[in-house]
Amino acid sequence: MIFAGFFLCVVASLSPGLTTHSEGLSGEDAAFCRGGLALSYPDLDINTCMFIPQEAREKISREWGPPKVQLATADEKKKYTLIMVDPDAPSRTNPTRSYWRHWVVVDIEGKGLRAGDVKGSVLSDYTRPTPPQHTGFHRYQFLLYEQPTDQVLTLSEQEKKSLGNWDPQAFVQKFGCDGPVASLQFLTQNHKD
Image 1: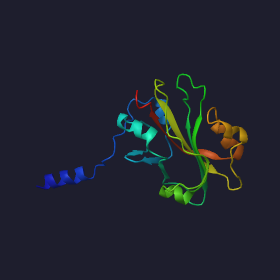
Image 2: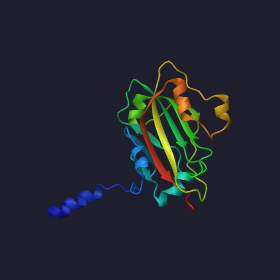
Image 3: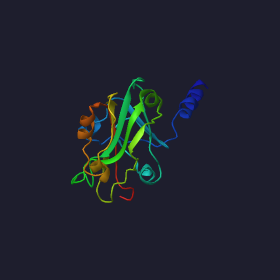
Image 4: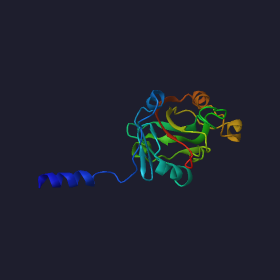
């Protein structure tokens, strides 16, 4: 009788969300994730480098909006910059539009980031991960930087003209951002592949 009660308790605590898949990642892809950054989409939590499960690929690319982003160790007194890019545009084997900019939010308060309530100035609106058909898996990288207090971060007029061929490293260096203090990525491919 005790065993049956324990079994019911364990089963009840399992998440009803989708299962994540991290097996099969290259060492480089697995090592990218560090610092404790966590993402939450409806029905899918991501806190380690992983492949998006087949059953979530259409939802992440066509239905779901921006994820909830959380860093439990964020310094409440600091501001942060969040960048989401695809380094594999249009494909990982031919990244001629590398570092496609998917989302940039600056002036994120540490207190909100700790709670998963990311509010700040949006420099690039969130665009869903939509890898073209037959281009294989794309990495979608989330990079979190500590932001200097004396800087106003903006995109240049040239950067505003195109999302592709963006240089996130030049952007953060230009404004003296520290980090990344945390990074996370997931891999997905076109939902029809």
